[in-house]
Length: 439
Image (cartoon, rainbow, N blue to C red):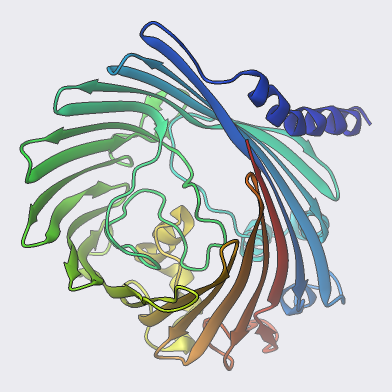
């Protein structure tokens, strides 16, 4: 009961941040300045298809409603042009059928030998490797979960050609759009709906502009071991150099990433009026001797000078950590080269060869229609996502979307076979509405 009484005040506080932000307009006092901004996002979804839940005797229903409301407050304090401190506080409330089913699965299978594995497979959650625990769960009852966290908290210094960052921040490398092999830290899934902000990781990062053609940077991402120690072997450290020339950015990167060593090349170029990009990585994994795994990406995009501003992006991806035969997908759960990276969110696909395409139209200055298709070339399954976006107000965006999948069983987007019963577990379709209010 006490937890329930706490939910309403916290949600009211989250929704009140826009008014507080307007009251605290950006101001400057000599070399000191302050900025406050943020957003409130509400994501409501209808999932059609419950084979995965029925297979484990959790429910016979076919339709599931869920809502996630996310409120983020971003603060930035700048001391002249030399020093900046930035923090992002986030309050996240999830409510609906998925939370109810998760609790039921924990009660039903929690005491069984493989109970934890069953719950993790039914309700997967990316576990980013971090040093600090900056998240706290306020409520977790049958239908509702409320957490708050600091997703950014970092200090950044600008010293001539150098800049240094330490704390919880984001770092994005590589030119990929759907797949980004040389983005080593918290890369997005190709089917992610909201790619506005990456989750923060705990890093120490340095970048230097050697000259107008060359930039070099290095990053270390520690992982906690025990109460306060750093897991020196299980942490990450990587570097990257960018050389600009021939109308392109050429990148060389590599390092040790938690349990594997990676070296990568990428390029981001302009050919005529089109953008062309490519990336290639070679990975060796601890505990998997005498074997190297390759990932590659090539894409091109073009904005057409026609009515409705059509835009097209096409991208090819090779994933050497996946399997070419869909009958072997379930066996990936036993392979450390795949499962460790999958749990960290570094890779998101089971197969080896993919093509993704994004086509966008703007029939009105305030309306955008985007269709995304991803095809697994070897098992012939398809993911399709259609989104209509409307800028209803200067600070309010509305999205309506649908995600459909096609394919046989077994296939990545079509569905897999239950290894215990032999029943087909089809991939569900999702319909959603997304409201975003910025302040």
